[in-house]
Image (tube, rainbow, N blue to C red; front, side, top):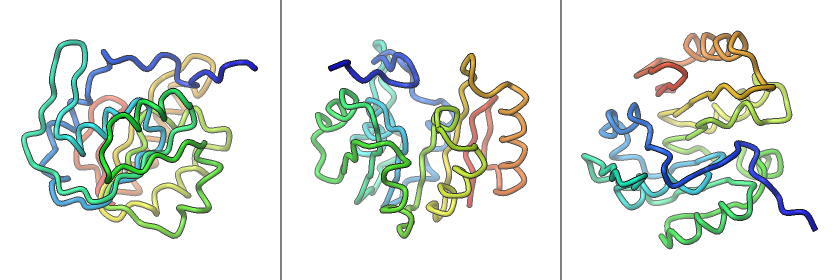
Length: 183
């Protein structure tokens, strides 16, 4: 049996927490429910549930206390699912599956915050179709980032996606290919 590999490549403990989200942490202080699609090893889960995320010797401590009651982390790569489970927080529900396999199950729910960070370019379906499914799940905020990956979407595609989202939702903050949207 061949080991399943992550689509994004290497997810390391040295990966920094996104500065744009950290700088606007106050926006999410009263969020009760969070959906994280493509949760990786759990940097957002650690930050929102435990109040901090460590990477490469740096500790990102949230300037606010979060009141999360439910955090759903969807992640298809089994080793990352195991890393998520090691967080050990009872509010964390790890769904070890691809988005395509659970989208129908989650489509009726709404979450205060939806995290869709560096994931879209790895979906098998057209980007705008995926966004049309994911964005309605967000009640208040949609955290979104694109990462240029060789051989996938071009920079022109990425910019077109961001322009479309920027027109569709209110941009609270942006930095390069990262956005915080208010829905």
